[in-house]
Length: 423
Image (cartoon, rainbow, N blue to C red):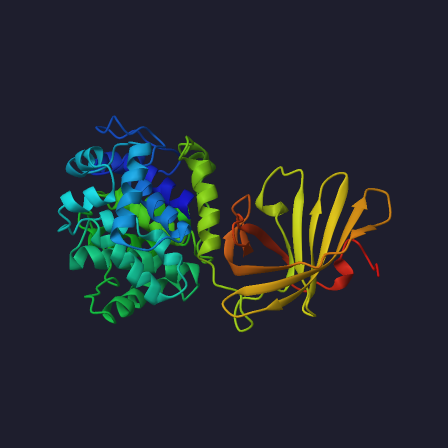
């Protein structure tokens, strides 16, 4: 999602408020375009839309309290470590002067209805419930756009991601569905009305144009072309639309390689976005539950990392047994366990045996394990190393980095244990 929205932002930046004739001539999606007057933003460079989205995504992953001051801290940090053009002049100066979120909140006038809150709201849409999406998008919007129109535009942009990611219906019904959600909490709606003509600076304009582009096209490249063809504030339109549409299995994911590879790749560029996206999708996936997403299956990490020389797998068999497997060119280690599903996505694992399989030799039982571990498991839609769709299991343990695995097959049995039958 983050790479795609950054491509939309960077591609759209070459056409933001440009002459319609320039747009008509160069909007081919066959490469990035240098803006005719914005010399400070080169082809393939993203703008404030993506930078502030990164800040929101980083805060979601952190699991820190979702407050205005914490979010403001993130906005200041993201800007100060990687200053870039694209911000409104006054806000750029303010970010250059303040030291932290508290100072930003003390000095900012948040009475804006422009697109700043909507352009960065996409990651919030990955949260598991509509109530979560509405709340979190409103909190982040109030930092800079504490107006009814600014807040609702942010909610609508995040809801578009939610609708696509959780496969809630056909794209033709996206606008009416968003209307129902925002109206249920007192919003005005109107998101199902098609947008026509130049897009102005107000957030509701960008989001309505994005929804229109999504409902009239079936591929990312066509959506991107349609976003820019509106003219006006098209980098924001493309950011919102591609962030949402990239999560829809109904949309052909056909962004040209020239745009993917041409996206900036500095410290916070394409590679950083790809890794951040993987962590974001994992941390917002639903908790595993007997009545919901299941951990049963064989899972591996080899499809998630290109060129890896080692691979890890984990199996959860329906009979309550399983194993962790670590393999390289020389040996395989297997840790067998019994497991139990607990409430709130927790899994209790009791290790039973450690086995070592050296290449060309019989498995050797090195030692028995009697320890237990308590993990939190999340299962949801993600992407593999080549941006293909994957069902991803994330296992979290206290004081450890989360581990991610893609589903290999769901019908795993004890016969798949690489160590074989050892008493």
